Length: 146
Length: 107
Image (cartoon, rainbow over all chains, first blue to last red; front, side, top):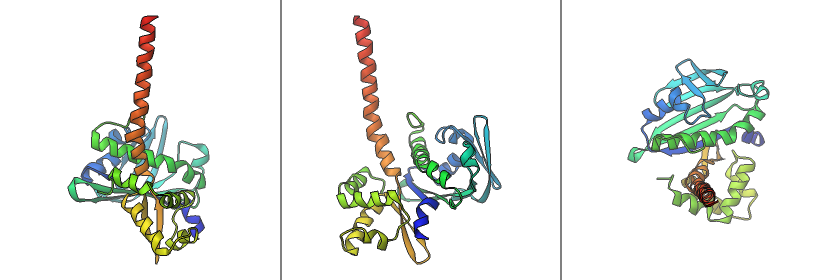
C-alpha cells in the first residue's frame, strides 16, 4: 500500500497573511481565481465547482462547503483529453487561522488512484497556484509571469 | 512564523536534509521507518532532521491510522524562487533592454 501513496495523495501547505474569509473569497470567486489559477474563472458553491478556462468549462461536485474553513470538491482535468478520461479525484482546501493575522492553507489532492497522469500533471501546477494565491493576497498583485 | 525564509535556508543548508527531501521528491507519503532504512543514521537523528524540515514547512505530516506519513511540500521553495530568482532575472532582462536601447541610440 505504501508504495502507492506518492501518486495518490499530494499535500501543499502555506502560511498567508490574510484572514480565512479573504482566502475563502479568493478560492471561490472567479475574479480572484482568474489572477492566479492559470487564468481559470472558478466559482464554487455548496453543490458544485465550475471552472471556465477559455472555451473549456469543467464542472465538479462539491462534497463539503464550510466557509471560511473547508472546501472539498471533485477534480477532473477537463483541459486535456487524456487527463479528462481518467477517474475523478478529490481536492480539499483547509484554512486554519494562526497568530499575527496569518492563516494556514493546506491543499490536499487525493483519491488519485485512478488518475496517474493527472497526479503527475497537477503536482507542479498546485505549487504555482498556491504560491500565486499567497502573492495575490499579500501584495494585491498577481505573480509576475503568472 | 514557519514561513520565515531563514528557516527554509537553514533547513536546506544540510546535506542529510536535502537527501531526505530528494527521497520524498521521488516518492512521498513515507513513514519515519521507511526513511530511516535508507540513511546511515539513528532513528533519533532522522527524526531531528525531519522536525527541522517540518518547522520550515518543507515537510508536512499526515496521520493515516497508526502511521505518520511525511509529504514533501514544495511551496516554500517556490516562494524563495519567486522572491530571489525572479527578482534577479527580471533585473537582467531590464539590463538587456537598457543595453539594447543604448546601442540603438548610439548606432
